[in-house]
Image 1 (tube, helix red, strand yellow):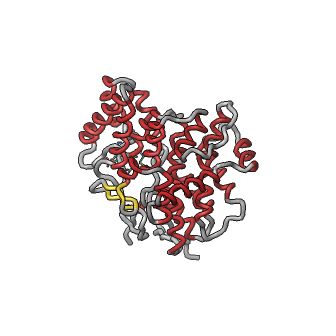
Image 2 (cartoon, protein in one colour):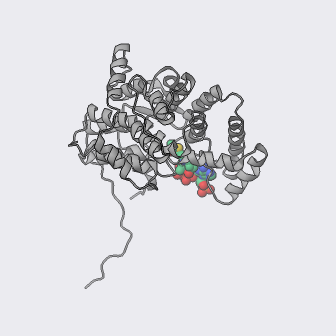
Image 3 (cartoon, protein in one colour):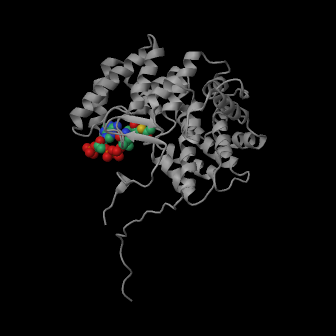
Length: 365
Ligand code: ACO
């Protein structure tokens, strides 16, 4: 029996949702280039595309935006749960616990669009609500007149964001909305395949995204750039890391063996609003140096920047605090998780791989 550790190269589903082509560096959402959607559409339009199968008309777009906006407010019981979690609880754990609690209201299999909308719409409010409590501020109620990205920035910062910041965050959450059978999405599909409810599936997906090899990297990219500090320090610092057997955060990908198309798009987004920001300049220098050194130390491994490297620059640019980088990735990926959960339920088959026993057999009696 062949063992495929990490399930690399194993195809377990057909999907209409996205194409992730790691050889050519393509990312397609239902027949549309993700990079084009990132500059021409809102996050809500892309959620509509993923869930309903087509980009919305103007009328559908407004109706869907309003439906999600109307679902943003947190019920009192959820606020109580969020506030009761001990101060040391990280925000991904808060999001995981609160999402689980949303499902306590009688959610059952099969998943519905309404349940998916409810969880997706509330995710930014959960994060912003806890962030306000953590920083000693009064939580700000969601503003229904704002879109998904703008309202999130508004709840975090207490002021309406500029158009440039809204567009930059919209681009980021569109580019990270969906990405095939990554670890967290697969987790969601496995849970759904048992006919468990959507809140359980998304709760499990959040748990998978939390790990540093998946969604936990952008804040570590930030830390890496802080530690590097100057362009002159980049090469010795990066060499030291690689020679010490450490991985460079924001580089390498299981599927992309060329530039991650999301990283390419986010580099452009971040360039468009970075202005004279020395951070952008440093990011470009670190990217170029790291790619050169990874070629030198790890020949043939094809290690390039992944989405998380340039996500760090965009999230910093729109003033999202570092500890909210992964939760922000999570609120974006709610779209893809739900789309896969709905698709799995539609063509369900229990996901149940096998393992090979290599332990001892019982002694003959
Ligand atoms: N820095 C240095 N070396 C690396 C890196 C890296 N970032 N990534 C992979 N390598 C090396 C490995 O050490 C290994 O070298 P070896 O063959 O000499 O032992 C080789 O490249 C292959 O590595 P694998 O672990 O087999 O690659 P895998 O496909 O399992 O890993 C992963 C993909 C986990 C993303 C990896 O590249 C990594 O750890 N990157 C850093 C963390 C990161 O940026 N995560 C975010 C990913 S994007 C996302 O999830 C949204």
